[in-house]
Length: 294
Image (cartoon, rainbow, N blue to C red):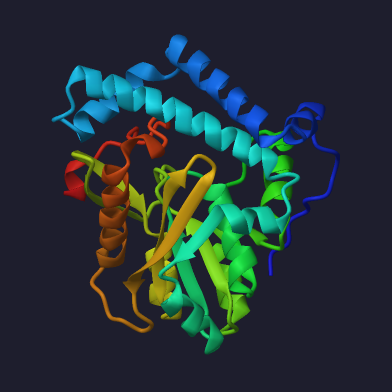
């Protein structure tokens, strides 16, 4: 199984300082960051254009309100992620509730590996920590290596705090195959743009032609493991609920692209239910669909 070093070096002083602040003060820091981002119009043109295409019924005041709410939510997630470096597991459990996980836990109890696929909605970092803490089985979590060495070290250290085994995305399938049929969770976030992958699934997503990774589909087709979409919603400031929706049953036969299409529809429904909680500032639509992909 792929192992990743997460212990080299110490966290930066500002990370340690911020993580030590009480929640009420971290909330004020998040408010300040959100205000600054809105005032300096951080990536606001890209966000406005993407939101306007996705939600043509939004008038200018509603677009502006949604953008402001995005800055609030994203800033809150930022301080939550910093706090994760010192939070005990009991605090994660208190702030993240699992809902509709009965099928997942039953499969794991029966010795069945399960694939859980999520999107970058709300605090996806706490989602991983909650799964590791609550499900009681090994969790192989895919990640995309970062260019900056310091950022990568901090990210890996934080994600591995409660025992997640972090696997570079390009090594995930090999790691899953080596793990055999022992009960465990394979976790991945799959709504990034597949710029480096030759295997893509094109679909209409938020009113645009959009390419999706097919990694989750390839894993399920090779292993015949069941897969679930893990959705997340914010229930209050600093509190979340995650739920598991069946994506594909163990051994289910599907057409090429069908599993990825199901995933895309679930991600889109989650975004439409709470638009500000998706990272609109990311460059999601740089790839353009060619005539050969239609």
